Image (cartoon, rainbow, N blue to C red; front, side, top):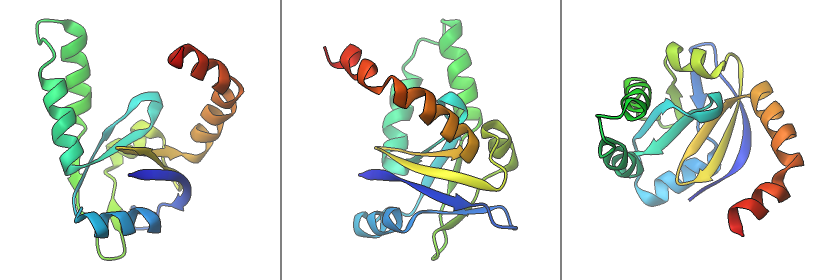
Length: 144
């Protein structure tokens, strides 16, 4: 559903704009609400409401008797917030989430099929530089 890599800035009111292609997808699919939370690798995860409910079901079924499950759920759900982009596709990311992902002025918004990730530009460039070198090896290990 969501694919691609887009450079966007945070405006002076603290808003990020959803890439035009993502706005088109939302309009075509009737998507008007997202959930944003702490992601892995110090980025933010952004889910449509439908996908959020699927992820929520998976994670809430993790055994709360296991410390790792409790810790993950605490960090994942306590950081979550719902957002509804305005007509121009702008939405506010709370400061605590921007702090978590180190997003200040510039961001990279990437589509990862069923979710959107929001990265600080420098963090994304560092991740990409490191991971792109081993992309073939990662694919080989995962697919074989």
